[in-house]
Amino acid sequence: MTVSASKTGSAATRRRRLRMTLAATLVCAAMAGCTGEQFQKGYILPPGALEQIQIGASQDQVLIVMGTPSTVATLNGEVFYYISQRANRPVAFMNQRVVDQRVIAIYFDKNRQVTRLANYGLKDGRIFDFISRTTPTSGQEISYLQPLFKLLSPN
Image (cartoon, rainbow, N blue to C red; front, top):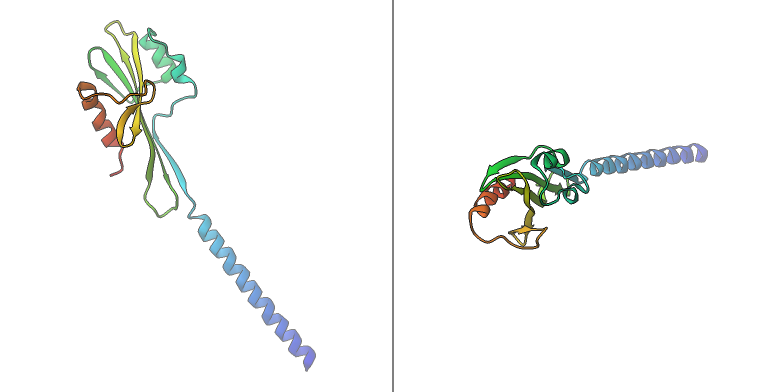
């Protein structure tokens, strides 16, 4: 009787361990489904692309290096805007959080030559040019950039 009782006890212990292992595996699988995600929306800047664009370069050279712009404005010449946004979601069921927003602006004169480059982003909640390290002053240019940033914002 002791031998069969010990066999029954060890079988029950094995089933309990099997259930615990199965439960732990299911919890781990559920948690793996909740891992964070990264999102890239809009234009993806090729590495080294901005360094290839020099002041005085032609509009065709810009198109070859950068590709088709997200949008174009005619403001004392033409401006190509390349718009992008990076966001992440730490857990699958949470809302996305914007990590970075950029608008790369390439300004052309009437002869379709590059006059200026700007890499606008948000710094401390304000539009900031990461190339010249300045915040643009109020004026016509900001009035075009603000709607672009608002359009990208998830709120």
